[in-house]
Amino acid sequence: MSADRVFIDTNVLTYLFDDSEPDKQRLARRCLESEKQEYELVVSTQVLQELYVSLTKGPAPIATTDIAEAAVRQAADFVVVQVDTHLVLSAIDACGRHTLSLWDALIVRAAAEARCKRVLSEDMNHKQVIDGVRIDNPFA
Image (cartoon, rainbow, N blue to C red; front, side, top):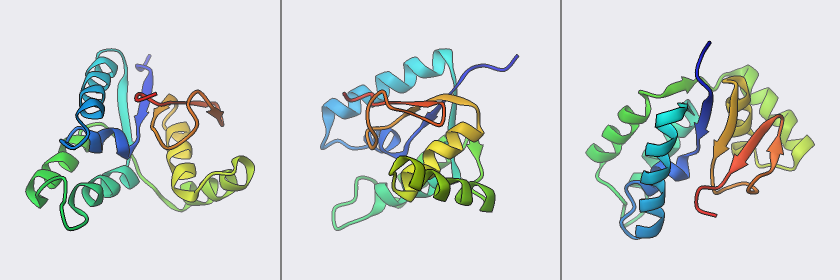
């Protein structure tokens, strides 16, 4: 029997590197270390892409491109769900059913596809259940 799984959204991974948010940085580290002990961690190709962009964007990026690439490589060691046509169409359907942005719907549908019980994210409603997946905001 496989381990239970938890999906990690981009914002949780980004805070690991964001020195301007020390409380959230500490909570993100503590949360991921704790979750790794009990659960198999899951991301999607969307999260990997967003992580790189979130770390390197803007005039004062959070990290250098080398650090951002290393962060993506490290996150790629988790279970990775491929965002494909089927997943995009499933997310479009979820947008209408749950009033989600396409990006949030892709996160939820990728988590459901990977049989995750929870998504760790600050972007959706804490403790909301969408398509059988509970949203947990580790910063709430």
